[in-house]
Every structure is written in C-alpha cells, then in structure tokens.
Amino acid sequence: MTIGKLSVVLGSLSLVIATAVAPTAQAASPYPNQPVRIVVPYPPGGFNDTLARTASEYLTKAWKQSVIVENKPGGNTLIGNTFVAESKPDGYTLLITPLPFSALPGLYRDKMKYDALKDFEPIIWAGSTQNILTVRADSPFKDVKSLIAYAKANPGKLNYGSTGSGSSNHLSMELFLELTGTKMSHIPYKGSAPAVTALLAGDIDVLFDNLPNVYPNITAGKLTALAATGAKRPALLPNIPTVVEAGVPGYEVNVWFGMQAPAGTPTDIVQKINADMVKMLHEKDVVERFGKQGVEIVASTPAEFKTLVNSEVKKWTGVIDRAGIKIE
Image 1 (cartoon, one colour):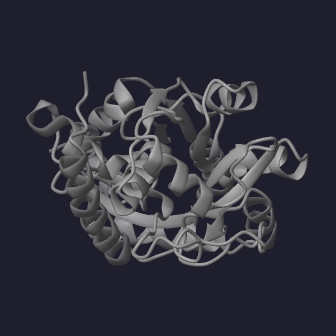
Image 2: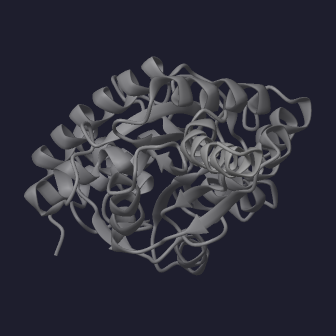
Image 3: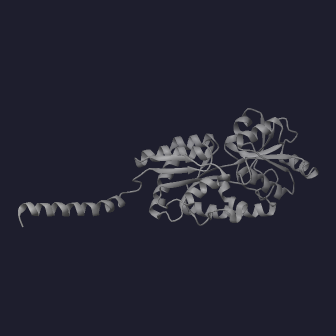
C-alpha cells in the first residue's frame, strides 16, 4: 500500500472513530449540557412565579447554562402539570409545585391525565407560608370565636372567597368549616387580587389567603387578621393567634411550595438539582427576600418532599370527600 493510500485509509478511520465517539462524549457531559426549563402552572406574579424566577437566575449562574421559566396556566394548574408529567425524564423540564397540587386527585379523580404520586419525581420542598383568616377592618367579627358563633347561628349566610376550587384558601376554609361544624357560601375568584378586592368592597365577609397577599392591607389597617393556619404564629404577625390557639383543635394548613420532575428522572440529576436549590435557598438575600413575603425556607431532601406530597394528597382527598366538593 502506498503512503498516499495509507493516509486516506487512516483519515477515514479517524473520521469513523470521531463520529462514533462524539455522541458518547456528549452523553457523558455533566448535567446540564443544554437549556433547562422550569414550568410554572400559573400566570406570572405570585410566589410560585417568584420561586421559579429566583431559581432561574441562580441556577443559570451556577450551571453556566440557561434556565428558562415558562408559565403554563390554565385548567386549575392541570395544563402545566400534565405538560411536565408527559415530558422526557431527563432533568430538563421541571415543575413548580404548590399545595393545590395535592388537592387535584380528590377534585378530578379519573379525569386527570397523570397520577400525582406516580408520574412525578419530588426534588425539593422549598418553603412554606401560611394562610391568614381575614375580615374587613370594620367587620363585626373581632376574633375567631365571634365568627364561629355567628356562622353557627346563621348557616350559609356568610360568604367566603377563594381563588378557585382546590386552591389553598378554599381548602383552608373547608377544613375550618368541617372542624367548627359551620356552613358558609363559597364565592370563587380568578386570583388573589380580585378576592381581596371583593373582601375590601364587602362582596364577601371573610377570606383565607396567603400571608404575602394580605399582609400589605393588614399593616395598612384595611383588613383585620383573625388567625393564622400554621402550627406556629407567623414571624410577620407574631400577635395573631393560630387557628388552634383561637379555639379550633386539630386545625393546621401548611401552604408549601416545591419543585418536581417527571417520574424516572435519574437519581443523580435529582440530587444535583436538590443540592444546588438548597444552596440557593440558604443564600442570605434569598432568605431575607422570601422572609419579607412571609415565606419560611425549608430546603428539604427529595425523600422529605415525597413524604409531604403523599401525606397531603391523602389529607386533602379526605377533606374534599367529606365536604362533597365537586368541580363543575
């Protein structure tokens, strides 16, 4: 064989080897090696969106890879949830998951296209806040006891607002009604802002809502906070009793926020995302910024978050069944 022919053969062989090795090298590249998207099943605004955008900014810098937020609202979060459940389990599509996620199995039953407990891989329970039981500042109800007494004497006469069936404020009130043996009329709104506006205008009498949403009007003296839904008093409102302290034993609603991935996402990728999210959540500026909104950092392990989701699905399915809540 001549030197020229040998060069051609070696050159061809090198090309074949390079072609064969390239995909392997690419596959072996550390995660992430392409843009990652974080799906928020709500419109922009609110803490779910804040969590996603904070993570996007931090992880983009940490990973030196684009992390993009995609808002996919609609269908009571089913649109965004379903999109992620049906996505490739490779770590490149993530889902912001709040408390209402755990109510959907009870609300929709066999109408859902995914299984809440089987089709997702929990990554992290990022943080929690509380719902605050609020009335107008000029309301005749100055404490939980007087509210319960009136509701018992006048079943169905009081109106309460929510941001829709299965929302955390709706569930908070349904548990309250169950444990106090009272009845009120439910008026859903398309978001927290219109629900708070309705309360201020007198269109509804009472509202459970996320602390960040009602805190400005409480501090401004426009709303009165009667109680907080958590196991302890919120740091922003230390003088407000919990619902239990106000006389309703067994009551607790933890308004949580987390992140999940499609089921089957490799464990090493889940662990990496968790570790980097934990680092982000312990950043001083993040702790302070979230704290000012009434959100306390949790930064759990994937296993801890999975335990929470499982227990919350069981809890809220029971509340929904006992209350006879139906999606029309």
